[in-house]
Length: 357
Ligand SMILES: [Mn+2]
Image (cartoon, rainbow, N blue to C red; front, side, top):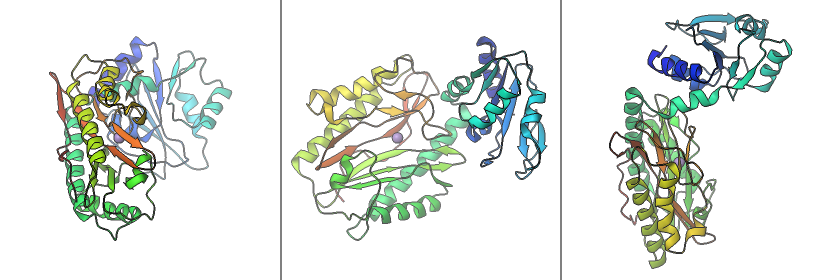
């Protein structure tokens, strides 16, 4: 077990009166054990309690090496894993349950009166996972370094023959070359007006002179996700598009500048948004400024106008303002940032100067 992480979680469990908890998401189990197990539809649960009694219930089809500090309880396809869990859970104490645990398992556990009081246990682990430890910070730096290299190669490979879809398959090859295990999310490649849809799905469009090109890309390296967006222009750029680009870049920089321990997520959102609002494009910045990231590309905690929580050293999140003019252009510039003791470290180094390919 990753004892430092476990101890933090046990402290939160004690202070929130949740003496026992079951975790089921591969990401949270990886966070605590260092092992990634993808059980598909089969039950996988890590039971932990404040006495340090840890059990992992896992199907025999998924061989897991011994984990120090955890008893592994195996079951077969013909066994009843809920019965094994019912035997472990303390009936008289509150049980925290992972928000991702399939409802049919939870309903069975309830029907068998395994426990009197069930609560959502995920906030405890989600909040712990927001603060990255040294090992995680190093992984996030490495993952972003890879993403920088991939961006550089991807931008260079842009040409008239390649559709958006084709660029996605080229990206897959580049991530592999750069030793990533795969995409951290389905890449967004958008040419011209397609970029005005922030979540555009790459299609057969090809790039035309004067088009903006959005590359919103990320990979996974040793289970840690990267995520960066750059917008470049093909052959030439109009004056209005250049103006939009420079505004988004300034919003990105102002958002980053605002990051330091003690400021609220909503203040960071405001710093970025204000730049765009003052210029009259406010209604075209349609989404939150960013999201936390780590083992999952969207970790808990977003950079938005309604999140009044303060940021703290070790948090990593994106700053990704954009302007989307329907039928015309989309520009988004995104970096991952780490909150340090005194301020901020930007994990992405790929240039934000306007590039015309
Ligand atoms: Mn993002």
